[in-house]
Amino acid sequence: MPQNLEQEVKELIAGVIGREPEELKLETNFWKDLGVDSIKAIEITVAIERKFKVSVRDEEIPKITTVGQAVAVIKGALEKKAK
Amino acid sequence: MSSSTRIAITGLGPISSMGIGKDNLWKNLVSGKANVKKEEAFIDGELWDSFFLHKVEGFNVHKFGIDEDKLSDIKAWKEGEEITDLNYLLAAVKLALDDAKLDYSKNDNGLGLVLAHENISLMPFGLKVSNLAYEALIGKSKDQLSKKDFFNSLYKSFLKSGYDIQSFSDLYHVARVFNIHNYSLFLNNACASGLYAYEAAAEIIKSGQAKAVVVAASDNPEIYKYLWFRDLGIYSKGGKVKPFCKDSDGLVFGDGGAGVVLEDLASAKKRKAPIYAEYLGGGFDLEGWKITVPQIGNDSYQKAINKAFKNSKTKKTDIDLLVPHGVGSQPIDYYEAKAITDTFGNNPKKPLISAFKPYVGHNLGSSALLESLIMLLSLNNDTVLPALNYENPDPKFNIGLNKEKRQVKLKTAMKICCAFAGFNAAAVFRKIP
Image (cartoon, rainbow over all chains, first blue to last red; front, side, top):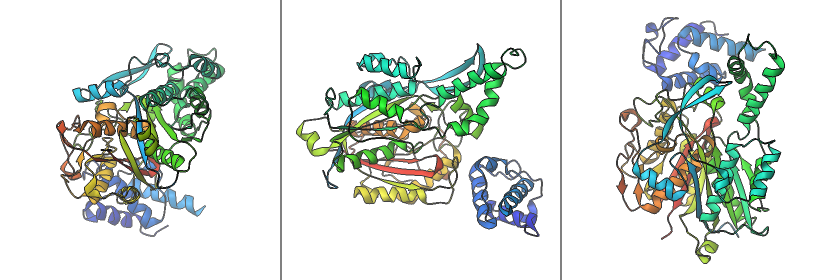
């Protein structure tokens, strides 16, 4: 598991949506608060899969609406992979 | 036959909410009014849910002049059930064969058959399982759990495996009705099935396995499918398909099917068959990322389109009319628009682009075949239909759909489709002078 997963996820998402990592709190809903749409959500998923070498399931994509949820999905996928 | 054999389209058999039969369909398309209604699903008299649907009306499989003895055999096999999807396939094949003026009354008719459908027996199977399970599990305690609540909970756990059901028996039924004994195939490439079917049919003819091949596809969407698409968040609450628009909110199911006859161009000319177009070739690419979501940024769709140019020996400047998948879902429209602009440039003036789901809805496994059939009618009428519901185009897509009915000389048309599971496909057709 990456040491600084939360920060890495913030930087990754900020890069995809064109914001500064500091603007993202763990609970920031980037759909409601930062105008992320279903198109950007897929781009975020693609970026997460590339960076962390995990596979996000179809039904998890719409659930990734906060940094916290993204971290949880990545953790779950990494744990599943490690088993 | 050989790889140089040219393939003509000689028969069309649409079954859609906009009309049954090519003449009826075209007349209603030109009138420009879609037939969308609210469909209500009841269980034991209790309303389960309702959804907008481009519904086929007045359909009766017994009105097409299909062999009644064989229809009766099918009903016996299906234990008395009338399977609407199967009946659509039978009617579409009949219309297409009659339109092509092909005689199938004898067993040595030289015909082949390709059928396409996403989940032909899912609905009756699902409802039967649900009914049996309810009676067995709930039995006398029906006051504690209504059938509606039981069905609602069951469909979620049942549906994924249900979507994996495949059927050969319906290929048998349709082939038997029309005395088809040559090479036959049932394929399922989700929404792109129709375009895969054209290619399969062309290959069957080129290989000499059949002199002509009927391709048919159908879909009769009901409550289970609606629930799945609703849960995926891609079913329009407003009941309008609005491709490439700012206010698009998803798809609306279509209903019906389509039949198309492909045959060797030389024999079609010899027997003076109606020739709607030549099938020049297709391109196919499987993205293979997710089942229900396209990978934004991937160029699989572009590859399919470019392969179609190569295989059809055409170039982008040859295409007069382009018919996209146009489902009215933001990410899918975005993915599709990117493939179009990467190929034809931003806001291309040529080809003209028109989308047909606002007319006939999303007919799922039959959609690509039905929409290509409409495209062939457009080609033959030198008419580009306006995209309905195209009131708030979204500039971020960098493409514009045709807004008014246009009479223009059309020669070459391309149908493209980006389906679930990443089945990306493109097919090119050219009018024969």
